[in-house]
Length: 65
Image 1 (cartoon, helix red, strand yellow):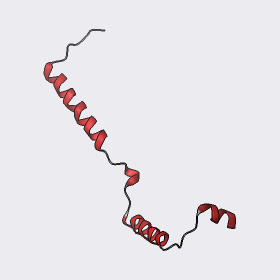
Image 2 (cartoon, one colour; image 1 turned 135 degrees about the horizontal axis):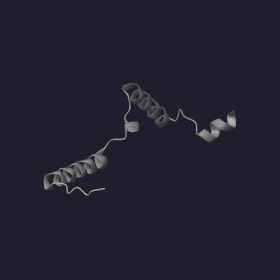
Image 3 (cartoon, rainbow, N blue to C red; image 1 turned 180 degrees about the horizontal axis):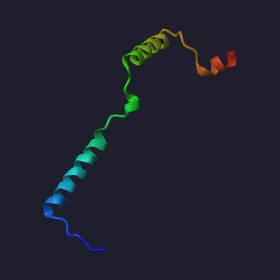
Image 4 (tube, one colour; image 1 turned 60 degrees about the horizontal axis):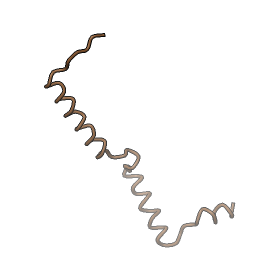
C-alpha cells in the first residue's frame, strides 16, 4: 500500500475539526438532564411536598407494604 502525503491545508483542517470536536464534547449537554415542561412541573410539586413534610422515606414506604 502506498503512503499518501497529505497536504498542509488538509492537516490543518483536520486539526481544526479535532479542536472543535473536543470543545463540543466538553460543553455538550446531557440529553437526559433536560426536563420537559410537564416533568419540571412534577419536580417542583414533589419538591414542595418534600419541604412540607408530605413525603415518606423509601424505607418507611417499603415497611408499610
